[in-house]
Length: 243
Length: 283
Image 1 (spheres, each protein chain N blue to C red):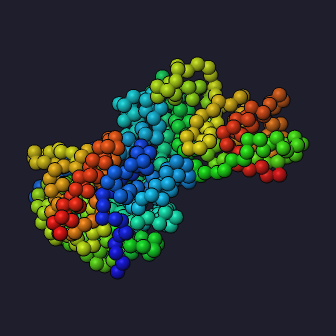
Image 2 (image 1 turned 90 degrees about the vertical axis):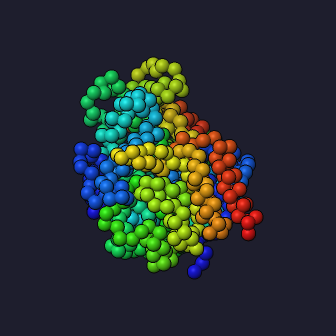
Image 3 (image 1 turned 90 degrees about the horizontal axis):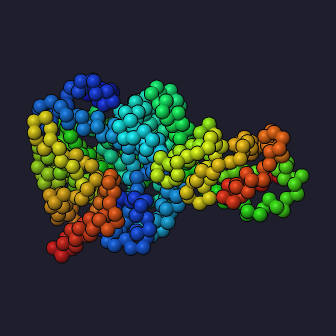
């Protein structure tokens, strides 16, 4: 029997059990084949729920299992690196009907993906927190700041960091509205930090190698980069000043 | 041929991050650790930092779950390169994988799926192991699976199939004694006879884990290899039967789901230590 035949019926319980499989005594394998069906579906569902715990908490177990069952068939892992599986999950959630009660769910998924990416990102040695002070402002504006590989940016119409914390029993009921978030990982534990308005655009520009002066300009009149820079420096998120 | 492993003939455990501090402060009878290769293929962060620290204190066994050595398709060159990188910097005492497939049409299924034992599949597995060993520049161990069904087309029995793979490739074998017990119960053969016909001289490592009990369509017992509880008593007895024939081997406790507190896992390792100690007394 080909692995294609074995595989074909694994993810579709409506398919007949492949022929040529027995119980060891010559009788058809029957539900013994279902053990493999179950193992594949359960292990992938558990991996998805573990990677998106806030989403799983918001959905509840039954909905998580149902949605995971669809996702794992449409977007099975493309490599054995389960630590990276789920990049397509936020957009998949955007395309699902019946989630009107949880309009923020896909953004919570984006935040959880960002947290996971930060967790597994390469290590990097930060510059000293006072390193920027020694650089004259006119030169700093033209320098380039290299951000740590773990820095992740998320933008949402919803207070997603609070929604996720509340869903996991880690914080109070969410208030407020749209959030721009930087996920920073000073040592090994990524944390979401709420940025001031335009902070997302500013950090995205820095990450794209734009000099800080130009990055400030593109954020519009009145944008003050100081809180963002202090946040980055305080959490070891700047690793190099390239002049 | 060099020895198939440099793991010590002592108990080891499958490493879980929640046990990190306790393992470093008092590992009890545990003399070495096994990691799942794919969990340490990120770019950095805590997993790799912990692994580096553990590797300074313990012999490490790298156990792959994603290479799909029994697959019909070619081995994933990117994944092979990741493995080469991992064993390159870590220089583990052992690298092992499974007689199983897990990838089809580039979709990874996160489970160890069975293959028939025929001359065709034998040649394919041998070619894949040759490629792995050539790429990694080292000998690997191949693990016997747990089986829930049999293939009508199989022409080899499993111990002979594994022995022939080892003979043709020079690879060692990883003997999962719980898998033997699970497969024997599920397919109706005698586990002791399986052990007696196994190429024990090629065994570089033994695995033990817990299984769950279910039934098939006919009410016959169907054991599921769950790695989610204590090793069952008849499996401990089968370990004794194995060690009496193989001599001392590195013995690993696998506990991957519903992972217990460290003292529970350490107690399982202690039972393995006792089994190895009985052997020393008998000798």
